[in-house]
Structures are given as structure tokens and as C-alpha cells.
Image 1 (cartoon, rainbow, N blue to C red):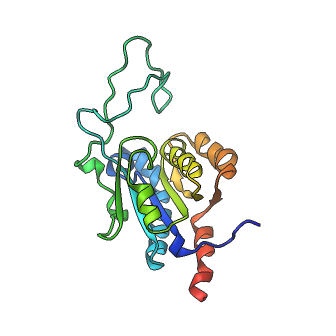
Image 2 (image 1 turned 90 degrees about the vertical axis):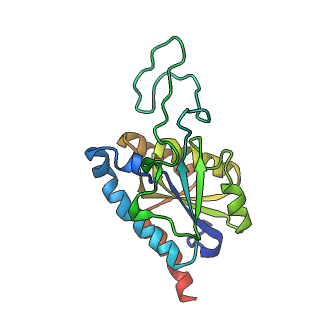
Image 3 (image 1 turned 90 degrees about the horizontal axis):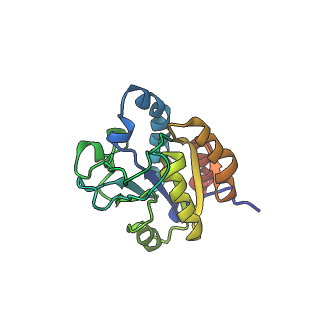
Length: 211
């Protein structure tokens, strides 16, 4: 039987790349993120009230791109073709230590929360996230942020392979391509996770307050 509740002490909320450089990247992007931020704030407040572990997975690339992926591919992240020939020059979208790399003010981390620098799509690859979760005896992670089809997907696949239970906060995730977002939420994530709205996640935790 599917578990319908979440144990606060065994669950962590992972906020993925809620950074100025992503969220504030032009008017259309800010508009797309507006409802997502509202839902992420609600989820964050819920987690803080219950004393849950909270972690921020944040891109923190070197300015010289020395730690960024440079793999050959057909297109960029927005499906724009990359011309064949010598490897394209990759420019980091988010450089560590800059305003762009800071978490947006609405979701700013508190001192006791975990800030995890990352250099790849997955929040787990070569970071201390797994160590931090296991040190807190966390077995379930609630994922939110963007992009759904890039960092959220990569982190979810990694978490599944590491035997974490996963809850995807569907209305606190976003992607520039709505069809990609919908495909993952409807056809891919349900195979490895529980896909729930923030309101549903809150209700999964509510019984703990009544114990």
C-alpha cells in the first residue's frame, strides 16, 4: 500500500536552483516563476514549522568554466542546434559568488539550513547532499525548483538509484518548455516518485501535528 503520510523527521525539502540568475532572467521568466515561488514559499514555511531538514542545491560554476560539463551534444538546453565541428565554447550561466548565484530573497536560507554548491545537473553528483541526508537519517526527499526536465529530473533519477523515496512538488517546479514539464509530471516521475501539489504535501504532514 502506498504511504499517504510523511514523517517530518525522515523527510527533507530540497530547493533546486531558485537563484536570481534563473528566476530573474527577464520578464517572461519572472512571470513563469511567480506562481512557482508562491508554492515554494508555502512548502518552505511548512517544512520550517515542522523542523524538517531543508537543503538548497545551487549552481556555483567557476568563472573560467573549469568544473562545468563540456560534453558534445546536438543542441543547447533550449533545443537550439549546436553547429558541428570543434566543441562549442561553453559559458557558465551561474558563476559562484555573484548576485546571479544567490538564492532569491523570498526563499533565502536560514543559518541552520544546508546550502549545497553543485557543478552538474544532479544535486547529488560530487556534492555532500547524500552525506547530509544520511547523517540526518532522512529517507524521503521533496523536490522543487527548476528546470523540471533538467536539474529536477537528474536529481530524481539519482535519488531513485540511491534508494531515497521521492516526492515531486508538481506546482513548485517549472521548465521553459511546458510540454517537457507536463511529460515528466504525467509520464516519467510517477514511475519513480509520488507527484503531489504543495497542498497535498501539506496534508500528508498534517496528521503529525495531531499526534
